[in-house]
Amino acid sequence: MGMIDTAGILAQFEIKGAVKEVKPLGNGLINDTYRIVTSGDDAPDYVLQRINNAIFQDVDLLQHNIEVVTAHIRSKLEAEGSDDIDRRVLQFVKARDGKTYYRDEADRYWRVMIFIPDSVTHEAVTPESAYDCGKAFGNFQKMLVDVPEELGETIPDFHNMELRMRQLREAVQNDAAGRLDEVLDIVKELERDADEMCQAERLYREGRLPKRICHCDTKVNNMLFDQQGQVLCVIDLDTVMPSFIFSDYGDFLRTGANFVAEDDPDLSKVGFNEAIFRSFTQGYLESARGFLTPIEIKLLPYAVALFPFMQCARFLADYLNGDTYYKIKYPTHNLDRTRNQLALYRDVRKHDAMMSAFIQSLL
Image (cartoon, rainbow, N blue to C red; front, top):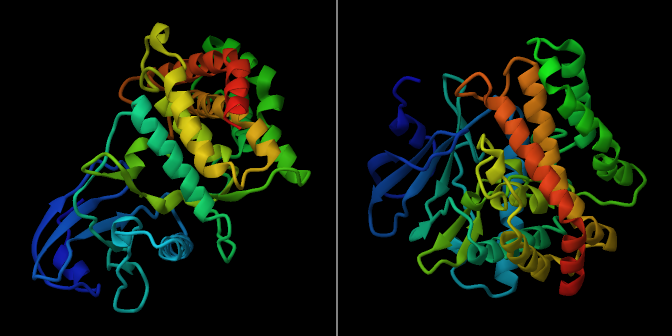
């Protein structure tokens, strides 16, 4: 990627103060992000970010979702008399045409947010921070229960398990990379539980399970903390869309409550961290129990199992297809990821009774 004309891009947005310095920010895998330092007393710093329109193909829909969600959260914070509101919800700067994004000559899409001062992100989850994360993501969903309009799916069928099984079956049938023989046992195990793992879609079709506005990418580094360790706000709102609440609850625990990274090849170390599960669930239910239906609460243990299962199916399909989707660092990277997630799934299933009992005890 060539030099970016940040001055030219920033000139398209209604920002205050003069630009003093532009420096890269964070380690996001998907967007290019810069911090814009300004001079001028009442001028905030800004964040300039490129929107990855290869993944989010409908930028209009994407930004509309984000505008609706941030405005709604802001109005909720104002209604409850929250202090420091500007640090508790993202604020987007309008471009000169009134939109919250700008498309440059090279067909790249950009947006500008106000930088939230004195904030940090964390990469690791501890039992202490897991409680705060659970509370924050539950609260995020709670604030959005009554969003005034329907939002679109920024990545259609993102967490649809039926679709992920169809994709896996296709990969098995095609066996494009000739790798099927070595993973037949894994395919069989996933097929054995596939029906049970696809129950969310069935319940939704039967009208028994609602979709709600969810974050859909609930990693610990998608929230900002203040210097005292309190959660300020949830960030990275590109995937905010209608989904089952399982998306936020289960996906956080998939990464946060595994003892090791999702690609650690040492399967003896993979396992379900009960302490993280308990504190995250406690925080989550404290915020969310008021709006959750009995079936959503009953299926929370299913959600914890669903995400390693889904990720296992996705990694396996990619391995069979010859590694066309996920970036790999060595030839069997996707196979290691597959086995890791399968090991996590198996360990989670051993905790079914424990999880249900713990959730009941909190109600």
